[in-house]
Image (tube, rainbow, N blue to C red; front, top):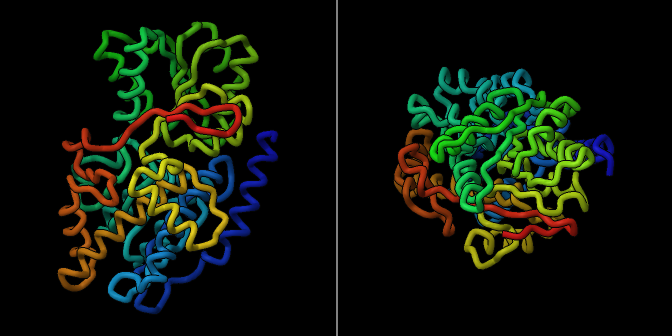
Length: 379
């Protein structure tokens, strides 16, 4: 499927699936969460799948009585992966006094919301970004990150590659806070081995990959090109680089969206590597994956099991565990929920290590996976 057709199809699916959920603040006793993410544009599939995974868990939980007989409602607004729209959405959520912000998609968008988070003291939970910008000490008790950082993901990449004797590493990165964070991670990891990137090139957010970027990186003949961009740009670059004669490997950080990238590449996905920050949605040996599949079976919904929907499900699972603990200690408030989240640090939820504090990053989940041309993922 061509890139434009792929994006249009995803955007249409997002609009059809989620339009009814964009509504005003509920006046009931529900615990209302606000989510700003891309439901249209070049990151639409990633936002849609993350949202559907989270909604799957909340629907299952609500069917079982919710938290202390209170329903959890997830309001979602489309920001198209644009910071200005995310800021406007966040302002609306804050004015509506949502209980918390949940599952924001991306670094530039999440960062755009931070001033409002700090000003209103509204809790932000599980933004889908590995940037250090949402992991600063001054955001403690305000922003809680479930996923590993890009520094951890790129450190694993570099350890793997240098261990195989592959030292010529180039970087294609998005020209914004997300891409810069990934570039810094690769650079820092390489520095530990006395190395630096052999070349770097940029691509603008929500834009096509410039041919100059392909030419610049391919000319250096790197062993590996690490890509820190969205799935549409990554897929386009892989095809263009291979067409230009590049025979090396491609590594991507988890934000690319494994299923989205695989769908965009088709048979050209063979051998492309992606770091993962949640357990495989296909291996039911993990407790969280078993819960995910059990909820899918009960729901009867046609939600595709993939890493993005799995991450949304897991984020909802962890947050709900904090709400449950807050309820058991008394009244559910932001303060009691924050206390419950702090108490979860260093523990496991459904077999998944929870580590909110920066100094405990080694406990976070990171692993490598490889895509195949027949739509499978090897871990």
